[in-house]
Image 1 (tube, helix red, strand yellow):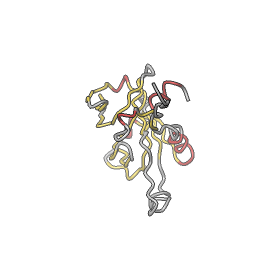
Image 2: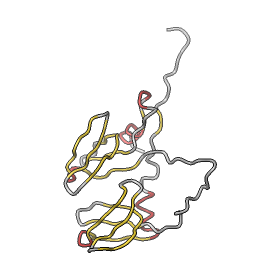
Image 3: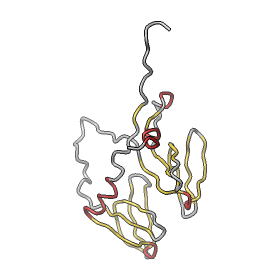
Image 4: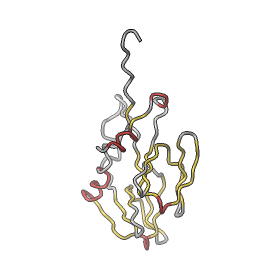
Length: 159
């Protein structure tokens, strides 16, 4: 893992109780920790360090969900929807979305994403549609992107 990514995934001690949910990566390689609030065809609304910003879509390479998955000991390891088929949609602008497809209606592929919520993709904007293992490949590419706390400073006896 490169140093820049390692730094972005390390949560500072003062933010330990409220770690970021997402990493926004710009086309130039810059990264920002925070929370994805919304997006449309023109911009992404992103909250970082309690400051809301609007980032033009043409400057964004990707937004990755880096929150730790919550596993409750009293629940099954496999969720009820573990066997649902996910699709990976590559759009004509180069964007990639991975989500659970629900239906096609009014020339749009509708679905649900654990990151974005309800998804509606116009059919004419789809360049490629991947299923099964190919869709899983895109999802797994960022599987290791999980935030972790910063190390506690070493305290030596006397100053």
